[in-house]
Image 1 (tube, rainbow, N blue to C red):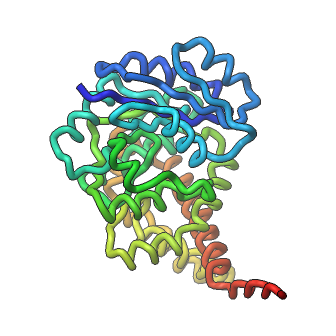
Image 2 (cartoon, rainbow, N blue to C red; image 1 turned 135 degrees about the vertical axis):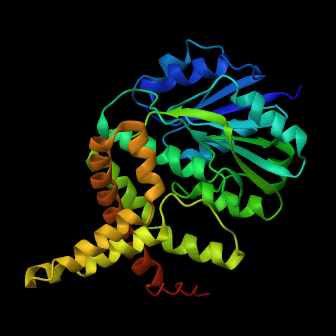
Length: 326
């Protein structure tokens, strides 16, 4: 039975740490070691960690999730590295299933899982929107993919040593950057047999700000995928994104009486992912579906705005380096 090192980066998640660690120690495939890297928390996280027989590593200040993961790997010894975020809790068979996949196929460089369709902590309707959407698009992408997400992912140590550490310069999109290097050498599997329950954002303002910030990497990410001819996971349908963009562009027409034009693009946005609408209605009913679609539209507006800002920054001329005078 392969030994597994569970590496958990943490920054101010005292709220969920106990649930996270409880789930790790309840695994049917017991981990050989659990390493929690506290990345400069100020919320009492270390008091929670101290109640468990895990190894605590403390970072000097907040250095980001990539640095925390790398530090955890450096202190570990297991044959398999299992990365788990501290705002998630695993289903009891998650480690066993991940190891079984890696044992059965030496060509796999990573096995990562999906999020459950119920939240780890019940915090309201906004969180239910986010959790349902996150579950749906990951479950839809089950199978081999060019993208790995390391919130709940297993990687053989030999593979990690070959591919190299996470890029510590990145605080966003570190998963995508690592996936590019990993997919060039090994296959990546997304499976619904590795399941985690996630405590997601439960307030609309922070949710939209996060979407805006993350979407600024959309253009360079898409271009990189095209260069490598890779098909990564997509959280949102491209047609839906385009429809929202066109609705925003044509919104001034509503003031001249041509309100049907932007509304038509909004209708196209809804129709772009009928499967998602059916899934949500089946889980929570038609009233919640209406609420869901409003939030989904708002997150797409934030996505489009972030993508535009990111594209402008990406296309802007970069300053020439200052010559060094001898």
